Image 1 (cartoon, rainbow, N blue to C red):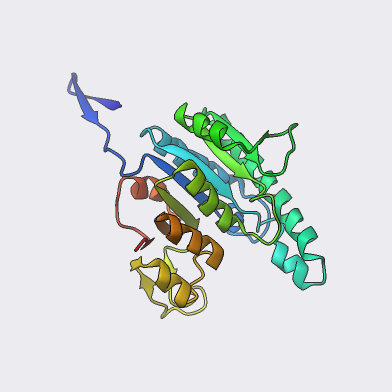
Image 2: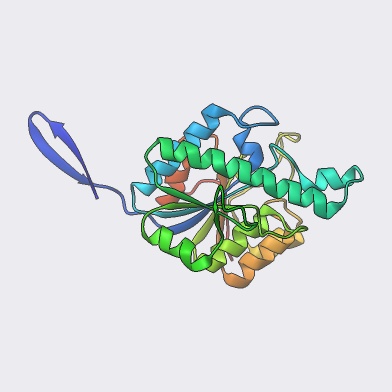
Length: 253
């Protein structure tokens, strides 16, 4: 694909940089969709994310997305207050569907063809998750949004991202966060926290680093799926990662 500029009446053609990855899973936390708030969906943040996804699609990258639901409901938080854990987790899955529909709408308003697939069947609003159909959508250039987690309680959307990445043979999982990588302590609380640039799967598990839950990290390790954790709030970061720039924290050895 080429972009064209005109300089002093002379047409100059510049080839777009070749992306490092051709098929990705982008994991967006529900909290990231809330922007500077703690709950709900921030329209400006949603629009920025949609624009960045459109940009990477223009480079020919096949994009699958898993969205969390923490900006609406957190299953673990509900169960900690006495609610049945399975019921609370199902409510969290429904929250991911709401976020997925909001992101789908934002993408389609920018002219990006999308398909939402849910692990819990709800045909009136989304397709049921079918692996082969999801891969076919990606091959046709559509952005596929995986909603409702794995369809099972006790599993996080991090595990969903790892599972779907393995199923569709994605080359990397991009973990879009509110922070710019993985730290040895919470950088929001401890300004002296150290950011890691490169980590192994075993290090993440042994040190209890909260990049993703242990089930998801183990699944990535078993299937050799690298993970890149970066700051979603910096416009253009998704494209930088796709093009191979070293930002955030890389997990993959």
